[in-house]
Length: 115
Image (cartoon, rainbow, N blue to C red):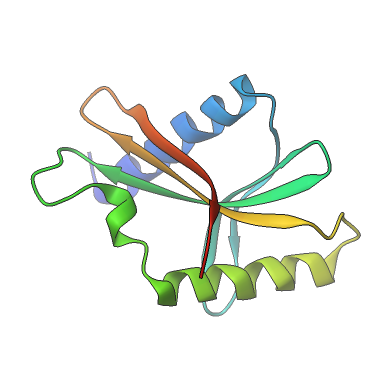
């Protein structure tokens, strides 16, 4: 598998996980000049702009450790851009899902990341 294929598979698993938890997937792979949001989901009245990280093993740390403050700022910019382009509820969270292993299992889901 290429890294692109692995990333898409991890995003597919993450989207299925969110659906199973009652989230509605609104969009995937939303891009701005500065950032891509892997999954935009809604649950109740809130939006979740979600980064998906995949790691085959934890030998070099978990995937969530690679979400930097710079990445969070880029995600916030992309979230605000997305909200300006369409009518939607204004409350939102920056979220992250870690997928790992050869079986592509969800290891961690954080609903609210802070910058």
